[in-house]
Length: 128
Image (cartoon, rainbow, N blue to C red):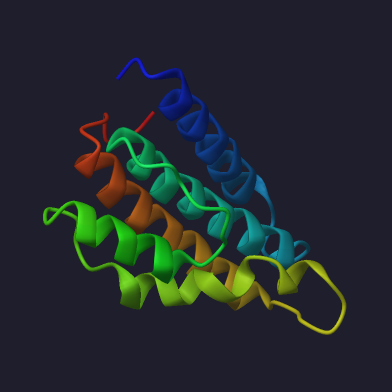
């Protein structure tokens, strides 16, 4: 894949992956959850870019996945797993909404699963 737009989406997704993977769930659960959501959002948008689609400006993982499924029948139904990460797009970054260490651990596990599935669909190496 040589499309610079696609490569940029992938680089940004991996940056969030590294951030979420390196933080401590006990001390930074909200930040972990946010970066997990961002990682998968960017992977979904990278998938759109790979298909020649212009990714919309939304944080709604379910809507992004629905658009992808309509464009490519190979794209699996990820909605159930995406629901784990969807609440962490913006609200978790502000007072009044929190995340616990267990939420962070579940978010990381979900991110890892979804990342692997999407990388396979994009025909990328399983791990970078």
